Length: 333
Image 1 (cartoon, rainbow, N blue to C red):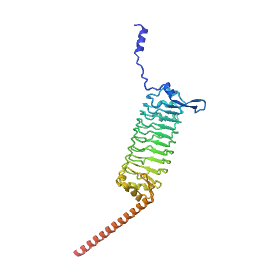
Image 2: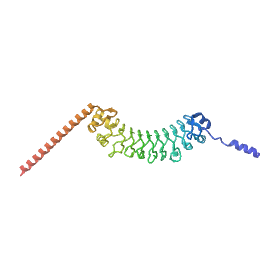
Image 3: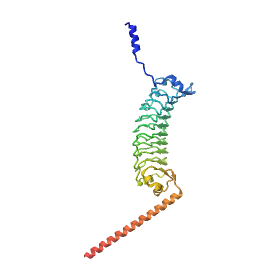
Image 4: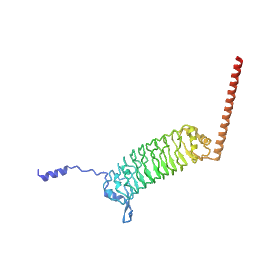
């Protein structure tokens, strides 16, 4: 066999690379839109890219040349990582929901994605978040993953909304020192305590529905802007726990529907709350009326009288027993 024939045989035997799921310039061009001035005002370019539902598995290398993109939608694909997006410095919005992403180490690099405002990583396969260094980020959505801890993950001064529903958190360590956070959604996790949240001065919405909370904090976290507590479908069973809300003078709205303490009291739960916390305005999404307050006050007064009567009878019985004991001792003498 000649040398040329041998080379031809080798070339024929080389396996072809399976490019299924790889992004190509043709695919990219099909999703480009938003033709406008570039961020540096030096020219015009396509600023948005919609590649939802394209069965993509690999982003590299072609996407890296579209440096003027500001919005990218990669939802409903089969991507396992999105590190190629680090080459796009002008991104302000990434939607990578409903993929198979397992890691986002790209977020740890302080030199990348520094203009990003919104990041949607919901419905992926994340088990942890790295330390996020995105100081312009305002919205983070990681619901429906398998994240069990966020300790030390946040370095996002401007975050205002965090969507963390349906993960595997057992506590809230890491949700601290986020001065502009207004909304925190952590429903449907495995949280047993929420006393770890600290220094969230602007937090107004705090959803803790469907967790594993049995007891309320002895010392509540300082959340001066929070007026409502949504604790539906937890495991609070002791009515005495409700009295702990006394520490929160500005909280006038609580929801504990679906907890044993509420279910067992039935229609009388609102009254029980008002007996302990007469200033409440909404209980289990049911507005408090003046009639409700009157009934609770009457019930409280009736219970007070019953307790006083029980105490009086007990004191009389004790006095009678003491008297009989003294008379018995005198008779023996």
